[in-house]
Each structure stands twice: as structure tokens, then as C-alpha cells.
Length: 113
Length: 111
Image 1 (cartoon, chains in turn yellow, brown):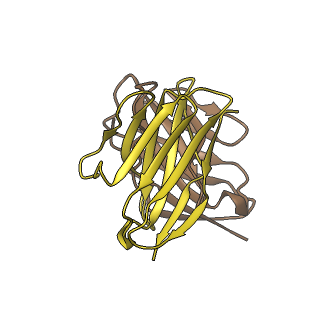
Image 2 (image 1 turned 60 degrees about the horizontal axis):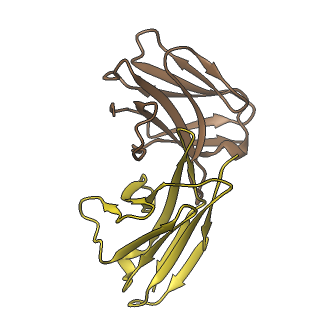
């Protein structure tokens, strides 16, 4: 079946640094990818919709200058958390659409210290 | 997308059937019922979906009431690996936009 590969699985970074999370679609092309964030014991919340070759669409309350999304190819979308703060610590998940369905990456647990 | 209501948590004994309910009283005629689950620290996984007929696959069965206002996901023989949060989502089959997740049901399968 369709697989979305997300890396890294977990990352620890210092406050003020930037972290890049990659999401790759394997064996299929993903025109659209979605980025979610999930805090402990809460549900997934959509952060942004990423479309290949165009600017991402951010949900209300999500800072586009802090969470940089790049979708330069049909198989790769990246999320960069810039100037990370401890409150950015969360579980980040990407999702791609394929054949009228959705497939999800395995998630990235970000801890900012 | 129609709103759904699920119990916050449920327990199930290993080897027994797990029946997870979902209420969706405002569902529209063209909206499907989807079920996903999320095992701890992993991305969501598709389980099953249906419109009005009952559906079964290798993972689960989906029972939708005749008035379509509620449904039940059935895991016939729950294992410890089925411990997860189960999300019931109601939406048109293909809208091209994101999936919206509610609170889900935290299923704990106990030995």
C-alpha cells in the first residue's frame, strides 16, 4: 500500500534553534500534503495544507513565519520549526492523499529544551 | 463535515469483541462514516468506511443503523495490539481537503 515516510521519528533541540521534518511519499506522487500537530492526550489539529509548487495554506492561529512549509516536489514536503520554544514541543504528523484516501506518516516527536 | 460523538474511553478483555459506538445524528445523505485509529506515538491508520450498508474487512466490521444516525465499529477478537485511540469521522467521500479529527475513543484492551 501507499506509504508516507516521515523523518526524524524524534528530535530534541535547544530553544532558539530550527528543526526540519521531512515527509516523503513513496511510490506515489502527493500533490497535497497536510501537516498536523498533536499535544499529549489531545486530538490531531491541522496546522497547514501543503500544495506542490505553491504556498501552503495555514490554519487560523498557526504562525506561517514560524512553521515554514516547503512542497517543492511531488514526493517531498518539509516542515521547519524556526526559533523553537519549549511550547512547540509536540507530535507532528504529515498526511498525503492518494486514490481518494489518506495515508499518514509515522509522526515526529519534537522536544525543545 | 457532520459532528460525531464518541465515548472518551472503553475497556475490552483480550479475545473478546470490542464494540465502539459513534453518534452522528446530523449526517447528510452523501456523507460516509470513516474509522481511523492511532496507536500511541504513531500516525493514524485507516480501518474501514461505509455509506449505509454494513461493511467488513480484515481488520473490522462497521455496522451503520438504518437511519444512519449512529454506527458501531466492531473488532471481533481484540488483542493487546488493538489498544489505541479510535476516531469516527463523517464526511463526503472525497473532498480533497483535510480530515478533521474529534476526540476519539481510547480503547484499552486488557489481558
